[in-house]
Image 1: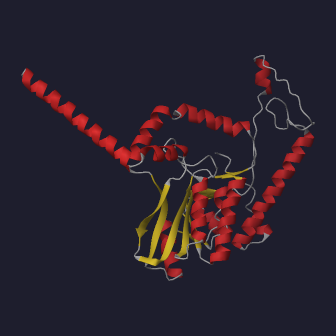
Image 2: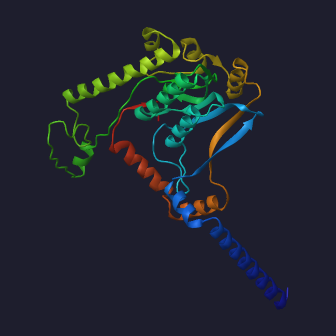
Length: 337
């Protein structure tokens, strides 16, 4: 290739890049870049839309909801940092259902090892309110796991479907703290603590838990555990004795859960949807899901900026470790996670 052709190619490339740059700038200004950027980076006011999955009757609709991941409120999704499970967004979906008369049923897909006591209770209470005020059916489809808090939020459902290999159960409460006193002493680190009361530093990682404190913590655990058992009793119409036969923290596969009365049928998500349609005359009802609208230039720009200035994988892991161990709290969580 001679020099003239090289020059021509370079000039053409420069012109193309210049043209694309100008078009992009105009597009950004027309889209009110600054206002959208501030909003999206803060994780606020992200547009929510409804994605139709199937069906053609918009007067009768079925909401498809999904809890996928640990049930914890770790902040809302943004273009800086999307989250696997957005607790506030999920609660917003439940609020929408409460006031939307076109929604005649809910299919809730659960794939979770559980999570926080508070967050699980928030979901449970909103589902219960929907059942009481809207009088619409809720069918749960358990995915590979619906344990502890994942089962807690499933309990109020009218019917629960599980795979044969679903891991469920783990009914109970857990709280863990780390004690690195011996390690600190070994490396010569000493903590000085000044406190207003004897138990102010209870569960401190720098000292052992006293017998009195252990009893106090166990009382809290037991009280929360009894609440969990009561939720299962009411939701599954079981006696306390029957619930407690499997409420010792054990996990169960789908078949054993069926035998224990914790689920109603062995089947997948499509079986749950088909059953809800057939049981309540919703054969042609639209099945839809809620989703964030983060498409177009906003998504591209956000992901690029997030990769440049957002937390790295190592920083995210460090934040998780610090969060998990710096503030012990009661959890409805399968112990392996």
